[in-house]
Image 1 (cartoon, helix red, strand yellow):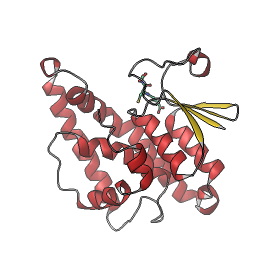
Image 2: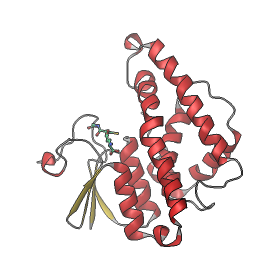
Image 3: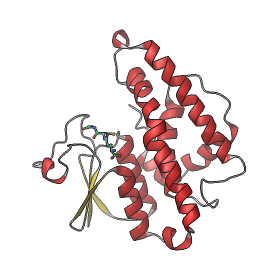
Image 4: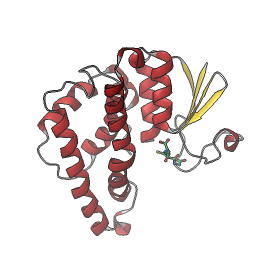
Length: 205
Ligand SMILES: N[C@@H](CCC(=O)N[C@@H](CS)C(=O)NCC(=O)O)C(=O)O
């Protein structure tokens, strides 16, 4: 049995719950409705000394770092790595790292600033600077998606999930976005998936 630790509103936990759903894997969820900044699981530091989420326990193997967990699940429970050539795996990795580093560095000040900070405490200079940078990075993703149904091989996969959770946040933000037609077409198709509706929709907070 796989166990997942972390709350439903965490972007990094969402990558894992969405992956588990797409791969049809049963799992036990701890702290699904937990609070930000505190994991209410006894001795959680023993499975994640950083006290961050997500963590999974896959039949005794404890793994943290969301993108590593997603790769592990697709390696173990799908034929993605067998069916995909190493060049395309590298491109999937490229976009997954783009999300967790280059996108997230601008997403965090915008999302936390506008959604998780009270209006009187907001640093608007910081927020506006990062909105511009974030929009530019989504333009880069938009350009890559031109002529593609999904990120890799026109087949829905792990890179779509990782960029998908970030895109849900981006499209839910009360900000001005540029015209991103390729990106929005791709987003429309992933947000209609049952596993998106079950795990991601309605979690923006
Ligand atoms: N690099 C880590 C980052 C994990 C992370 O920052 N998690 C946040 C939530 S998205 C967290 O645990 N924050 C403390 C908390 O919510 O208790 C990953 O990709 O899993």
